Length: 141
Image (cartoon, rainbow, N blue to C red; front, side, top):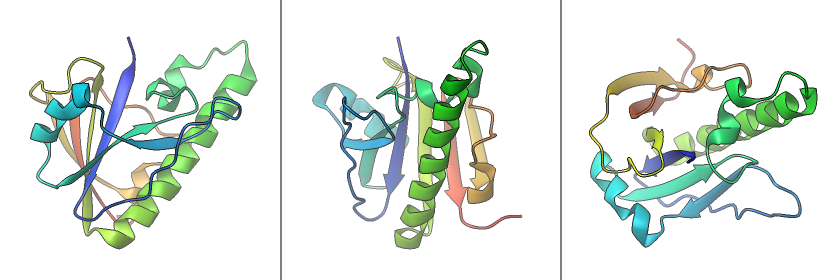
């Protein structure tokens, strides 16, 4: 089972297809099975956001094997890409909404509701608890 991360915005956002030959950060349209996640959001444009692992597992620094430093480096690269994408998306939307959960919990009521700033998303960040809804705004403080 995988972590999944969803992003919602008031405006359409660019897709970034996953490339199995060069795995990296990716953004995709929802599949029919993921449609229940739309109920989490107040915004009309909803996307699945993935790390180098295709899913959201690759955003979690805690899942990188400490015996393989390249895993942590790749995770941090995915987190930097997430930050850059959110930064660009905040130029189109005043704020963004995220929902992080285990695959299969797309329609589950969030256990946590957070407000975060873009500056909270960086390569050193800790990942979110299961079923966390996050409103993201620009700024640093």
